[in-house]
Length: 100
Image (cartoon, rainbow, N blue to C red; front, side, top):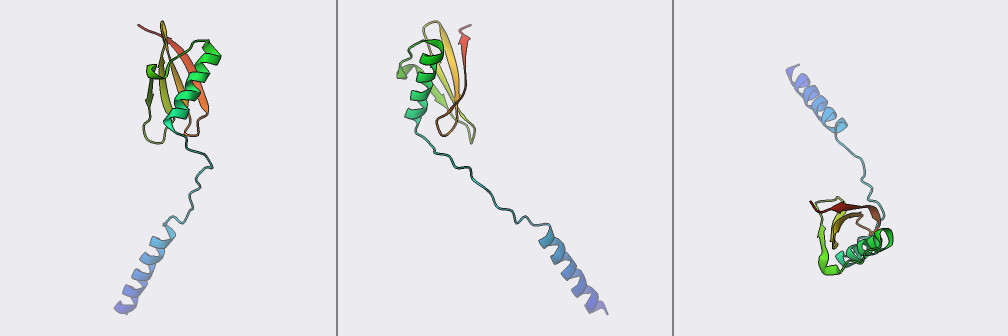
């Protein structure tokens, strides 16, 4: 009798373990990862088009943390700009900020 209870308990624990396991499948979005040069180039083009200021590539800082978007800071003569760019090179947002 005790032997049957042990087998039943082990079987029950095994069933609970399997039912709580994740069997899902991850889906990776179809996107192209671009180089830093393209991210910088797209950011400079965005600032030229939106704010009409020419920024040289040596006046650009580019930052990335984990799987987030690129953060690009472009330094102008009187102001600086922040541009957020996705991993596939598309502009998310851009803004103009004053030096303080």
